[in-house]
Length: 341
Ligand SMILES: NC(=O)c1ccc[n+]([C@@H]2O[C@H](COP(=O)([O-])OP(=O)(O)OC[C@H]3O[C@@H](n4cnc5c(N)ncnc54)[C@H](OP(=O)(O)O)[C@@H]3O)[C@@H](O)[C@H]2O)c1
Image 1 (cartoon, rainbow, N blue to C red):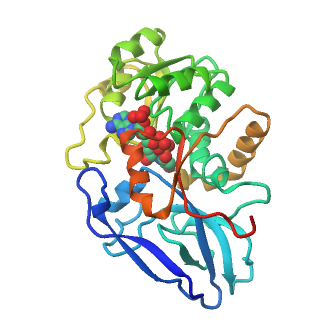
Image 2 (image 1 turned 90 degrees about the vertical axis):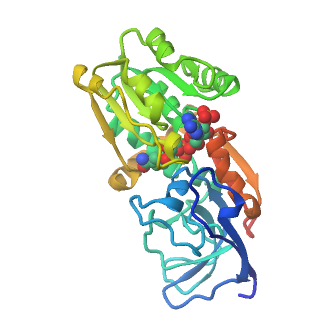
Image 3 (image 1 turned 30 degrees about the vertical axis):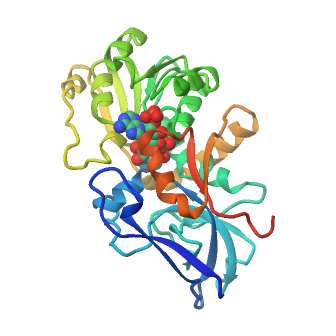
């Protein structure tokens, strides 16, 4: 393979918002493969808030070493193979990084290498049927244990995981209060996704609005944001509430000074449960989750909103959109079309 392999490598650790200066652009030849390996041409990148954490701190994986290709979920096509189970032309998803070409032996990294089933486009493989949709399904239904009588509050509701949680909660008959930044996102959540109410956290007093909108208390809180929003919702939880800690994006750009929780005593008063979870610990539930998500989408009950930035060269800016709230639904980067069309 003599094609050029364009890459973004981690050049500096951020201590605030991510900029292009934290990366270095490199171009080298596409790698060659050994027996048992295959070469992937990356076509789409997934943008995930966790990438910001991987750049700076140890999480469920050690922080990414400086000089290494930026880690990223992605999807692409197999272009060469010396592996018995992967053939040229097959579409796969995995963690292949911010680069045109990656070598894999098919073993699981942070997330397994999966073949994309025929008829599924790559944006869908990275959103509805990828980590995002699966996280929403397992986080809500397994960790949140919702009852149809519950009112659920969802933060980060117009984002990727959040927009699926809102819709699945409606499918299950819950009353949904969505929290997002700005009137356009709030309108979208109520008029397009079926949320019963939306709170613009950039313009409204979240704690007061939760109190008005949830007079019987919040039965389930699906939290993507943490910080002040978590505190505001804790003030209004119902007895026996389940708080699903999916993410805490409000603190990812400032790990040193992220705020603490003031209202945790409400967990005691309300005999509530607050549980962090990682989707990777629930791989046994993935087939069920994918089955449900695909069925609901086919029935027109679940829509997948994707937000696309074009070009590998724009990957740093695309990642930053998650932190400025520019994305609606799943943020993706399109690198190229598949050669098979
Ligand atoms: N536990 C797991 O296994 C797991 C798996 C996947 C993702 N996650 C977590 O789930 C959360 C959502 O991930 P995603 O991929 O779906 O991202 P996303 O919600 O599509 O994008 C992030 C959104 O967060 C909001 N946001 C950014 N900074 C904020 C702040 N300071 N305060 C309030 N809202 C802020 C923005 O929306 P607004 O315009 O509304 O501000 C932005 O659109 C993240 O915290 C992520 O780490 C967890």
